[in-house]
Amino acid sequence: MTDFGYSSDYEVYLTKENGVQIVTNDLSLAILKEMRYHEISPTNIALEFNVSKSTVQSSITKLLRMGIVSQDENVTDSRSVVYHIDAALLFTSDTDIKWQVYARRASAKRIMKTGRCTSREDLSLYGVSLTESGLNIVQGLFAVGSALVRNYDGLDYWPVIVDKIHRECEKRGIDVDVTVKDGLDLHFSSKDEDISDVPLIVVPMLGAIISKSKKIFGYHLVNDVQLSVENEGREVFMHVDPFIGQDYKRGDFHLTTLEQYRVNEPFAIYSLNGRATLFTNPTMMSVLYALSDGDNSANGLSDIIGIPKATVYAAIMKLIEMNAVEVDKSSSSPKNYKLIADPILYCRTPDIEDCSNIEHIVREFSNGDLDYYSAAISYAMESIRCMGIHFDKMFTRAGKSMAQVALELHPNIEPQQFLETACSMVSTPDNLEIMTLIPLKLRITLAQNTLWESWPGDFAKGYVAQGLKQLTGDEYKIRIETIRQHS
Figure 1 (tube, rainbow, N blue to C red):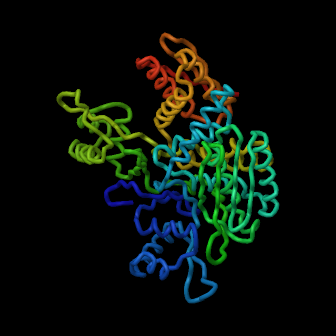
Figure 2: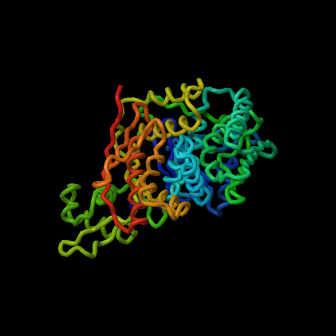
Figure 3: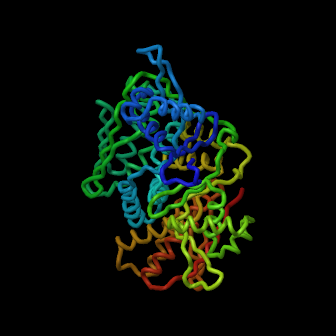
């Protein structure tokens, strides 16, 4: 982490022995990026980046200590070693979100047409909610797919997954070509439907293929994907290159205890001007978290946080400089400050006693008792729960964005009709119903085994608030009642 306690350039990894680790050093980030595509050695990297070999070696040594990188003997020169990534990249700030945000429009069209959100739209919209904030989760979804198929043998898995891709696409009127030549190519096409959401929901499956690529194809694939969405969303092209370099064993992740998921350095991520900025400074994180509950003064924040006012004030001034916080111009003395950054996530002590449910999800998927979309969502959510990572208030913003798309698709919709569409935004087995109009009260019933916690309620609240505001010009106070069913 930087000495300042914040960074807009970072990668967050889950390691096999050292829990969650954060990388922000520019050289380390560049080295790790190269490792996704080919083997590296300190000599080659030093020449490529025009830095000294000792500087490169120092960065690699730190990555080795963190548990992010492993080393193997160089088969062509026993006097040297080569390095490769041996950890799961959860998310990164290095992102191009355009293709991912297209997925929201495709999902909105489908929900409005069929009148019901399904697990396919859930996976798409949940992912878009993160990526539109500037957080790249593609690598994290690769890791999810890899974990789900760890019980499969590579050779046996390939015909299974190709058959599954064809059957799933056929059910949805999508044509698909799978080509293995100089890597892996997938071409999805539809005559009439916008399938822009396909990349986001296929990424975990690609991660599964990449993790088994040595057994399937005889060589490793790189841990990245090139893709494009064309023909107004009716065609999607995806390509994965071969990994360049000597062979190595790509290990599976099989973490069984909460200790293995521990977050060594608590962090929070907020979206600032479209960049997902990571904070580790405790005072700055406390100020941001407190302001997410409402505007406050330096004195008020000092009382809430339990930190001297001078320290709080210094953090506020830096956050103002970063465009994360601003002065409430309508406040007199003392001045109030308001949060203008969008919260994405924060860390707390995990609220569960063990992580046994992760193994249950893998077994259910392996046995065919859990569909692909639900398995990907539930595995991802259970993993972040084991780490104590929470997504807070971000989903309200996602609902607002969805409302804007829905109104672009149906600009003449009546407010009452729009309100009714909110009920279709929650997927089964959960349910949303309108209880009263004055005051406006919505009830969300979460099934006993639902995957969700805050997502449906926060998403629906943002969706309804934004839609009614655009249609009527009024801001409605919306009450959300959430009921969780029990056995």
